[in-house]
Amino acid sequence: MTETAWSALRQMFVHRYGELCAQLARRLNSEELAREALHDTWLHLRQKQGSEGIHNPAGYLLRTAFNIAIDERRRAARSARWIEVDAFLDAADDSPGPARIVEAQQDMELLRQALEELTPRRRLILLASRVEGTPLRQIADDLGLSRRMVDMELRRALRHCAMRLRRAGK
Image: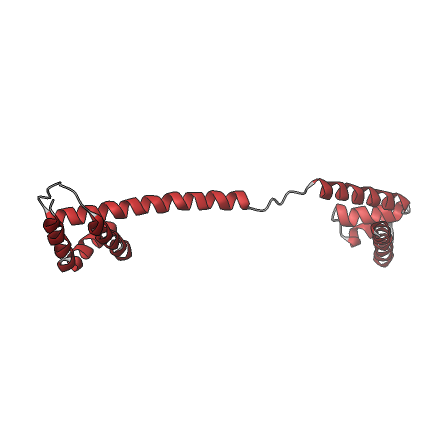
């Protein structure tokens, strides 16, 4: 095509911009994408040189803009997939690391030792209440104690364990 033909094609683009935008927006279901594709088509026309003949100038403009829009959608989809992959790879790992595992094991050993230091009755009350979830009223009935006595023994057991864990943490 001659420079005059390209110039005529660019003029047609300017004069039929609204019509091209409306047709493209209907095909793409997006007015914004249509405008962006037409902008890129204009840039394409400004740089275009060659000897090919165009038999249907309006169809050529619409097809060029449509192809540019489809290419942009594909690029955006690929980019979105990479963003999702990057986000997945950058996600924080909530699993405990080796140091945290060792610390938890040490805490469990300290708690086991603290439980061994309790009287058998306090240990039984603490485990029944906190591990098994048994209500204090039922523990009192099972042991033949008052609820108040079970409550006091539980508090003493908890205080002893807390002191042992705090002391070891220093």
